[in-house]
Picture 1 (cartoon, rainbow, N blue to C red):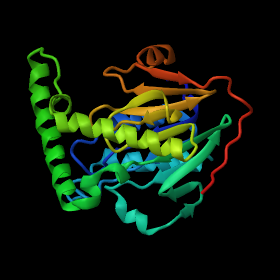
Picture 2 (cartoon, rainbow, N blue to C red):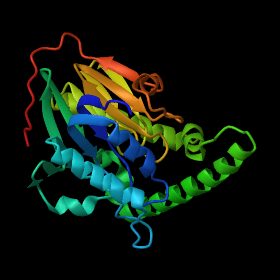
Picture 3 (cartoon, helix red, strand yellow):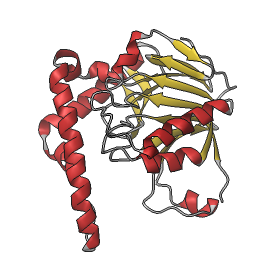
Length: 279
C-alpha cells in the first residue's frame, strides 16, 4: 500500500460518466491515490447528452462516491459546468458543504491569477448548432467503442494499441485548426482579463504551454480527458504538472511515481501564497 500524493490542487475534466468511453476504473484508482486540498472538476463530468438508465456501471457511481469522500475529508470540490452537463447551468452558484457549483472560477495562487473554465464558449458548433454537436458526441462515443474493441484484439495478437480519434485530429485540417484556434482564443481572453494562468478542458487535448507574445504572457493549461488520454493537472508547491495515467500500476510509492509521464511548469519566484475564490 502506497502513501497518497498530497496536492494543493487537482484538476480533472471531460470524464463523461455515463458513456462507454469513460475510463471510470482508472480515474477511480487515480482519485484514491491523491489527497488534494482543492479538487476542480472542469466540466463534462456527467454526460447528460448520452445518459441512459440502462448504462451507468458501478465504477461510474464509485467515482461520484469518491468525489464526495474527498469533500467529506475537508477538501473544497469545485464543479464547473461544461456543455455536456449544461443542465446544471440553470444554477448561478450553489454551495453544498464543501462542494461548490460554478460556471467559472478565479483563484489567486502564489500571487498568480488563475482562471478555470470548461471552454465550450469558444466552440461555435456548441453555440450555433447544439444538435450537431450532440450528434458529434454520439459519433465520438461510438468511435471510441469500436476503437476499444479493435485494440482488445490487437493486444491479443501482440500488436500495439492505436487511437482512431488521435489520427483523425492529426490528419484532418479542420480538426487541427479547431484545436489551435481554441487555444489561441483561451490565451487571448485570459490575457485580456489580466490572468497569469488559464485552465480549460473541452477539446480533450492535455497541454501545458507558456505563451509569451506581443499581447502578453500567460500559462495555458488543459486537463485533457478520461476518455482517451487519462490525464489530470496537479499543482503543488509552485509546480503545475500534467499527470498521465500509466498503463501499468504497482503498489509501491516509488514505482508508482516512476510510472508517471509528466510535463511540468514551475512558477518563477513564487511569492507568499494567497488563495481566494472571487466568485
